[in-house]
Image (cartoon, rainbow, N blue to C red):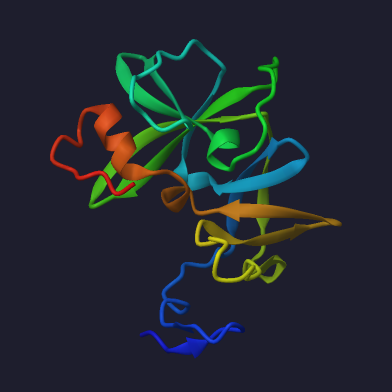
Length: 182
């Protein structure tokens, strides 16, 4: 069910109700700079230390390339670059979180580079608020919600929406028939 609403700038929007909101559950939290983010723990397959990444030509800037993880080729996304943040040096805490994203009934393993993994938190739904609306020009569709933990706020991500699936399918070799949406 969708309802039409009128936003501050008078634009009609009917997709507000269909947006998925975060609920009770466990979230793996990680840092990019001073900001803390969270992913649904059920999307996380494993956490590995930073390793050599093989560059793939003609991919978007945020795609660092691929890794060979136990015989499986996995695309790796630089989350800082995807979020248009400044790049930083790789440290001992830099790691790759291997997540499983869904696209058209297919599940794709993808690595995301983060500055450091923090902890797994059990966040009650009462402590999660909907992402604030920043206006029509700023896309916040990839935010599931804002988790309030003590005095801090964790930005809870919908990792399926964060990652550009069509580019990842091509890199992983399973998207030969996909058209690139970018």
